[in-house]
Image 1 (cartoon, rainbow, N blue to C red):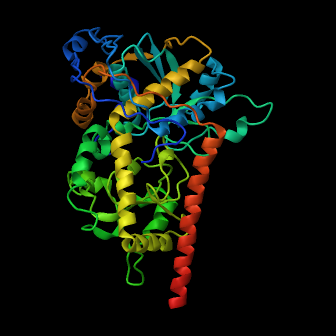
Image 2 (image 1 turned 60 degrees about the vertical axis):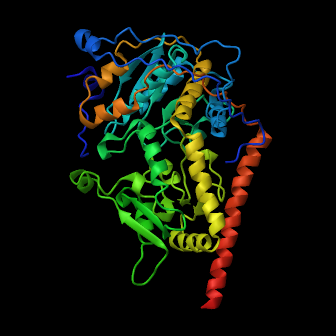
Image 3 (image 1 turned 45 degrees about the horizontal axis):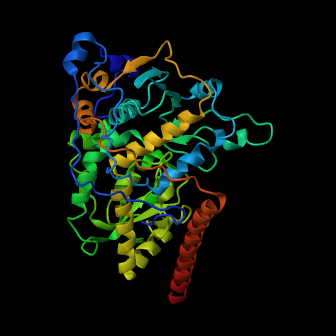
Length: 477
C-alpha cells in the first residue's frame, strides 16, 4: 500500500469586467524576452527506491533579478476578500489552541515547515476531495518553492460551513477556530479556499481546470449566442437538495413551458457509458444556463459561467473564493428561489427580447472566468491567503508526531488510473518564472458598502422588472 493510501485511505473507483474604482488594476507588461522556464520532472525512481521524498526540487527559488523586469500585475478584485475572511483574527492573532479547536470537524491538518509539506489525517473525506486538495497544496509549493511560510491549518472537505459567527460575537466572546473549506455563507466564519476540482474530479471524470479551461474556450466557439437554443438549460443531480427538486418542476410539460430545459444527471449510468453525454465543453448550446446550489455551493458554477450563455443564478446562500466578485445584471441574471418557474420564464423572455444586452451579460461572465480565474490566479490566491494567514499565527509551526511528509512524488508516483492521469495533467512543471500578482488593499468600510449596495440595487431592479412583466401578462389574460 502506498504512502498516499496509508494517509488518505483506499480511494474510490471512478464509478463512484469591471475593476474596482477603489484601487488601480495594473495588468503587467509583456517582457521583452520570453522568460526561461525551469522544469523539474517528477523523480519517481528516487521515490520508489527510498520511499522518501527526493531532494532534487529546490526549497528556494526566485525569478531572475532584473531591474528591467516588469512589475507583477495587480491581483483580481476578489483577492480583497482575503482580508475580510481573516478579519475575525486581525486583533487577536491565531494561537495554537484556536487551530486545535478546529479539528472537531476537520479532515486533515496541513503543515508547512521549511518549505516541506506534512499532513495529519483525522478522517477520510468523501471520494478523493482530500487527495486532490492536498495535491493542490503541493503544486503551490512547486510553483513558489520557499516562498510559502511555515504554517499549520485545519481543512474540512465537507460542503457546508460549520463556524457560526453568532457564537463568536459580543464583548466577552472567544475568537473562532480558523477552519479552511470550500465555501461559506454570510452567517459563518469558515475560510474559503479553492476546491479540489481545480486539480480534477476523478470520480466523475471532470478534468483539471487548466485542461478544461482551454476545452471550454474552444467549445464556446462552436455556436454563436444567436445560434443557440433560446431556452434555459440545466443538467445535474436533483436528488441532493429540495431546491433542485423544486427546480425540476419548471421543466417543459403539456401544461406549461417555463422556457426551461432540465435534465437529471445519472452519474452511475454516465460512468458505464464513458461519460459521453457529460462533456462540459459540449454544453454551451443554449442561450441561458442555470446555476443552482446543491447541499451547499456547487463546483459547477465556474463551468456554467464559462459559456457565453447568460448564467441564471438561483438565489445563492453560499459563496466560494471568487464568486463574491460576481455582480447581478453585469455577470449573471438573478432568479428567485421561492418562485423559480416564473422567474426563469421572465428572464428568458427578457433576454430574447433584449438580445444585445443579454449577449453582453453572457460575454462578461465568460470573460471574467477566462481573465480572472486562470490557474495562475488560483495559485496566487492560495499563495496570498496562506501568507496572510501565516502572519496571524502566534506560535511556531511544528511537525505533528502523527503527520506524514508529502511531496508530488509521494502522491503521483503511486497513484493509478484516472487519479494518476489527472495528477500528471495538473502537475506544476517547475518554479514560476514570475512573481505572484500584487495583493490589492483591503476594502475600507465605504468601498465595501458601495459594492454591497450596488449588488442589492441591481437585485431590486430585476425584481421590479419581473413584477411589472407579470402584471402586464395578467392584464393581457
